[in-house]
Image (cartoon, rainbow, N blue to C red; front, side, top):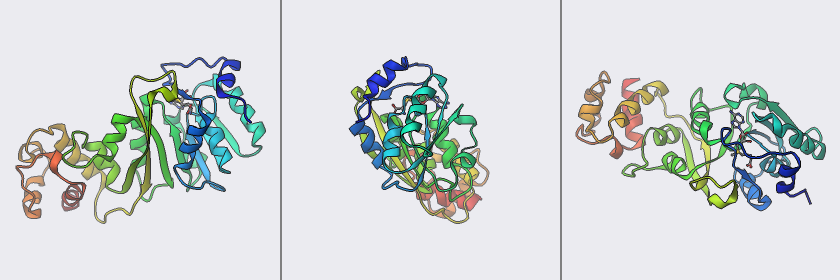
Amino acid sequence: MPEPLRDVIARHGLQASKALGQNFILDRQLLARIAAVPGPLEGTKVYEVGPGPGGLTRALLDTGAEVVAVERDRRCLPALAELDADFPGKLRIISGDALKVDERAEAGDGAHIVANLPYNVGTALLLSWLEGPWPPWWSSLTLMFQREVAERIVAKPGSEHYGRLSVAAQWRSSPRIAMQVHRSAFVPPPKVASAVVHIVPAAEPAGVRAEVLEQITAAAFGQRRKMMRSSLKSVAGALDALAALGIDIERRAETVSVEEFVALARALS
Ligand code: SAM
């Protein structure tokens, strides 16, 4: 049996730092359930952001995966080095900021990304993984978010959570909420509930430029209560394209489906 994480944290003096978004999960069963979300990982590569004291990292290594993990807090490195001794040759730690790492070069094509993300950088990292050439270099994303962010990622039109993040996540991937996680699962408990989101890349719709879609959703959801006749006035050609597609310009962005946004972006790409 591995040492309880509470003891690992105490032995290495890892008091949680708010500035680094540190809320640790200590329950090994819960960590094993999170590590199971991507499906069997034996023989695969996993890229983990923010291993902290290494609870999720151990659960991932237990599946038979090789793990490359990037951690900003140097205080965690000795605890992670101990893990290396239990899984020789299977773990590589990068000491640094995940926002600056050349992830693809470090983790390798086809890696599964798994992370209990620091909340302050979670959305920026997600957007960076959803952008760029498609299919992406990663095979799947399994990410812990504040529940409200998770709901925005999977939201459907008509929901109060539906917006730019929903379209960015859904136009060429299929995101789902894999697990709800109560705040009491974390030490210290955050103010809000969390959820694990699982994202698998799908085929890219033909003839759509990502930056055009982003420009449209930025304008449309920038004024989400307004009709598109008004919110999309600034996007050249958008109103004519909507008319040609038979999409009523008096509708508001929050009623427009991902497929309709994609059709509009295709017409303008
Ligand atoms: N994985 C551990 C767990 O599940 O208990 C810790 C999760 S904690 C929410 C987030 C971790 O990300 C912390 O260990 C924190 O130090 C680390 N972190 C914060 N900002 C980071 C960054 N920019 N790059 C890499 N790691 C970061």
